[in-house]
Image 1 (cartoon, protein in one colour):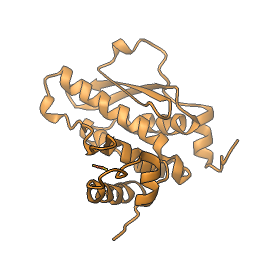
Image 2 (tube, protein in one colour):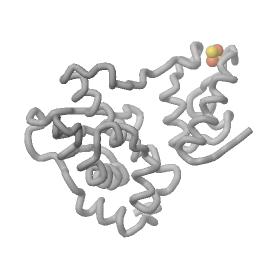
Image 3 (cartoon, rainbow, N blue to C red):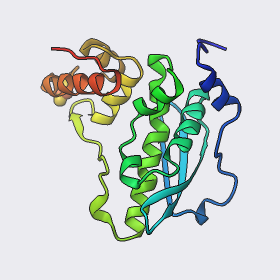
Image 4 (cartoon, rainbow, N blue to C red):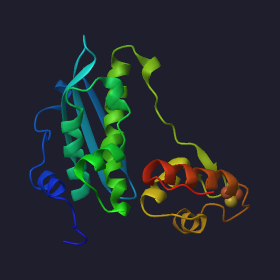
Length: 202
Ligand code: FES
């Protein structure tokens, strides 16, 4: 298998994924679905929640994603059980990969799928229970008007391996018409490199 230089934990979670959804998602308190059309990945996460304590009691998931998405979501589903909602909400892909050992850097985007679906499921629970004020949904922001590129697409390109503005341009075509978006795109590139890979640049 290509570059499968993974930890025993990753292999174990891929071969024996925990908490795979087998019953009807309608019986759960929160449901989140996400997918990256360009990758062809889809992820569904459902949650059971102890309302009195605000704690996740069960987390199940289903994906058509790759082996890395399976391993990281399996790990995530173990990590969030017993967690208060606000802690689970702020779990990051880095937290999950740290727990797994490590995934090759360019595969981090796969672990973002489960993490995004988890937040969508918590948002769904908040919305169903009249707690809209707790929802922190990240709406995509248009950064490049000419080429129609959003901040989400920039983040995805960074997770897929873009490290410089030139590499970002190659992947998204951002800034290739009037160029006015260059500063905003460069700032976001730095922000995502710092957030996902601890890479700090000037
Ligand atoms: S706004 Fe990005 S190229 Fe014009």
